[in-house]
Length: 146
Image 1 (cartoon, helix red, strand yellow):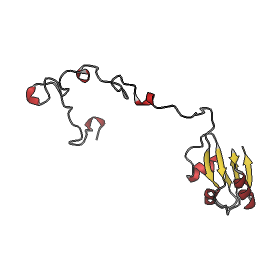
Image 2 (cartoon, rainbow, N blue to C red; image 1 turned 135 degrees about the vertical axis):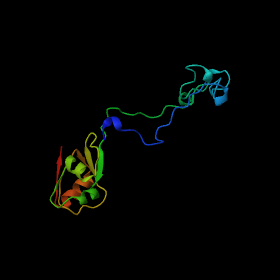
Image 3 (cartoon, rainbow, N blue to C red; image 1 turned 60 degrees about the horizontal axis):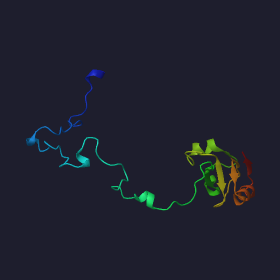
Image 4 (cartoon, rainbow, N blue to C red; image 1 turned 90 degrees about the vertical axis):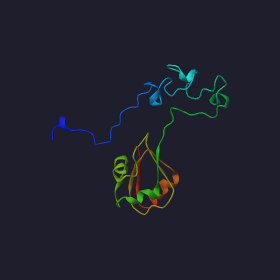
């Protein structure tokens, strides 16, 4: 088989319906756009959210809150999740992605203290809660803050 012999499966490609090709086609004359008006004109139509000149909903509603665009967004992991590692392992960003706990490290990793830890691990992360720190050390592990 050659590249020039390839063709799509039968019925996979359908011809585009050509509007404005006579009254007998069922879509002649106005081409399915109806009579007159803004939506029937070439380039006609209104943008998303336009309400005919009335003050649009997104401008009528009050603004709320503040989003700090410079804030760090951490990938958060509970202590109980770390039980998936072997005893004595070093847990860092690469190891977490390899084992499938994380997909994206974002601005860093923060370990939270939910659950119990049964393995002795060396955990390398950007931040730890006090409970997470105490649980890791109680299990005989070590923490390293990046």
